[in-house]
Length: 372
Image (cartoon, rainbow, N blue to C red; front, side, top):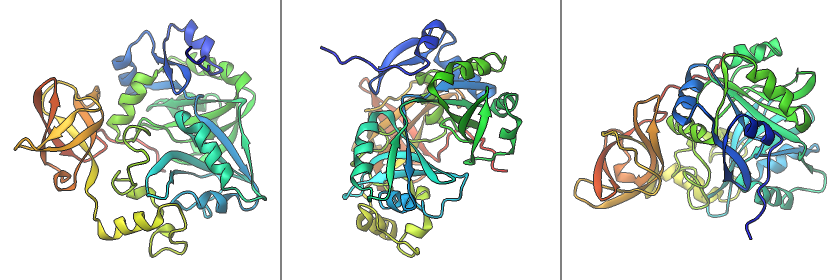
């Protein structure tokens, strides 16, 4: 018997809006709406798209040593994270692999943590197992999470509270929207400007409707969410990063904070530190995550094998689609390090044919974050 799918607080609204629902990370989630994936993607790049990401895990860590405790699990500077700032992080294992990626925000007297839906249960166990007695974890079961993304996102959200205009990329604030206190960060998963909003579950629908009432806003499903994040070079956990990929192999060096590197003031001290720091120093890795752009119109999907000009297998695609904004197929892949240089020609096997692709710098489209 199949397990009952969970639903988000906005499930009934998605159904009423004609969404096509699919199982995702144990939830019944909207994959697309009447517009369709391609038009939703383009709408988000040109105006404002609304996403329900309430399936993700929302946690709070309380206690004077909360930052120190969390920092022991990630190669990231959490101790010096300023109040009102958010930072990207990833849990590592003893082999240097990635257990999950997450967002960490410092709000006054606590840390607010958002983890991926598929890893939520194991992340909670992992954090709990490593917390000292003076740090407590609060699992926020009664909150929804919405994202408003796109060039018109700030204009739209500012109609509900003009203070959002004062924020820049990765800022976070507690602000009132539709008469309720929300946790808001200026961030997202599309490469566009935008905000992520944690709202009490019973106020999620009034907030969603207040945003949808504005002509610039359309619902965006998981289908376009995937093509949007892929075009802007952002990893999807379980596909482009997992327990077998180190942050160095995954080209996530930018996510490893200076204080935690070999010459930093709090060097190492996270799971797999020896392996990861050695890889940073020696650059000795056998494979690397790269961006690929197709030279034909046929999309290259996850799992496609990659070959060099002499037909030697050299890697595998971990995410791939046709990029509606870029107007050509885009993909992420792991390839042998010798083939990771920009401009390298690689061939993807699709239905028995070898399709030419070129290694290209990510993101595939410009990132439009407002950095102030």
